[in-house]
Image 1 (cartoon, helix red, strand yellow):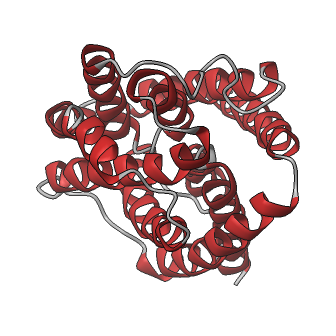
Image 2 (image 1 turned 180 degrees about the horizontal axis):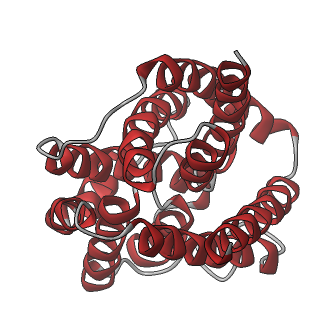
Length: 251
């Protein structure tokens, strides 16, 4: 019963992050599954892809209703990451659990520091920047590899790249990043389909349910609070998560 409640609470937090920032939520999913719900790293990264797809799809629909998704730019960016996502998804099944956990902790630190260092979301990425297809291709490939290997959406990488490399306005970058996240996560999940990883659906389903509801609430929350405030909150939370994971590796 305790694990069920924890799944509900963790899912709500992930949904709030994805819906409000388009970033950070999926990075919280894997450590929540490992440290709160007892999943192994391999199980957690695979389950995370399922949760990220369901939650991001809900958030994407919310953004699409308000016209804040640039479909062409998002699909172009996502296309570059599909093959790396598939390859990394296959590779992750052969990586030791400790290595996966360490890589995830490093990613959480980088994401948390990025959020805390910027006073406004993704400042320095100008909405008037000229589109750069080569830069978008490289960034899209890197994002796909991260998604496939660690089971995260990588919105904290996708949003600034969409703004800087494809000239997507900041107002549409969050919604567009969700399209990229879904495409990469679907491919990575398909690549892992042949691996023998058990799924505890009794915990995954309530996690998804509250994450989906949280994504809608996150979209509304983003319209009421300063994005920079939300960014600092989630940035601090990511650093705390990374510290917990580092301690767990050392013990």
